Amino acid sequence: MINLRCGISIFPEQDKAFDQILTDLLEKAPARFILLTDVSGQIISARGERGKADIVALGSLVAGDLAASQEIARVSGDYQKNQMIMREGSKFHTLIFEAGPYLVLLMQISSEVPIGWVRFLGKLSAEKISRVIESDPGNVDDVMHEFQSGDMELMMNDLLDDVWKE
Image (tube, rainbow, N blue to C red):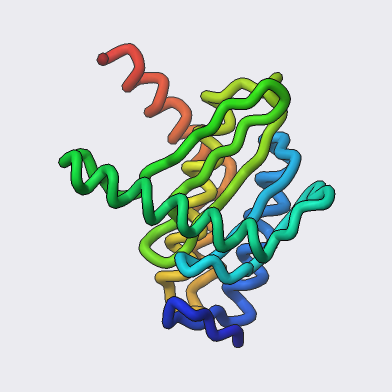
C-alpha cells in the first residue's frame, strides 16, 4: 500500500490497474511521455521517454499548474469537473487532465498526432483512473472490465453523435 500526501492510499490492485491504463495509453495515443501524480505532485507512475526531465520537479509543477488553472476557472465562473489543460508546442503538445479529485495525468505527444484523438484517449484514461482510485480495491477488476473495447466503441459512437447534434 502506498500512502499519498493528499491523504489517500493506493492498494496493489489499484497500482496494477494504473500501470495497465498508462501502458495502454502510451501505446494507443501514441504518447512520448505520461506521468501520473497526486494533486500534491507526488509521483505515482511514469511511462515513456523522460529525457533529462526531473520527474519529481515536473510532478510538483504539474500539480501547481492544475491548481492554478482550477482557481482561474473558479474565479472566472467557468469551473467544471474533469478539466483539461493543453499546451501546444512546435514539436510536442502537453495535456494535463484532472483524474478525479485526487490525481493528475500528464501526457506529452508529438505535434503530428491528432489532438482530438489524444484528448479523447486522455479523457477516457483519466476517467478510468478516477474510477479505480474511488473504487474498493477488491472491485478494481470490475471497474477495468467496464472500460473494455466494446465500451470504447460505444463511447466513440456517442461522441460522433454529439458532434452532429451541435
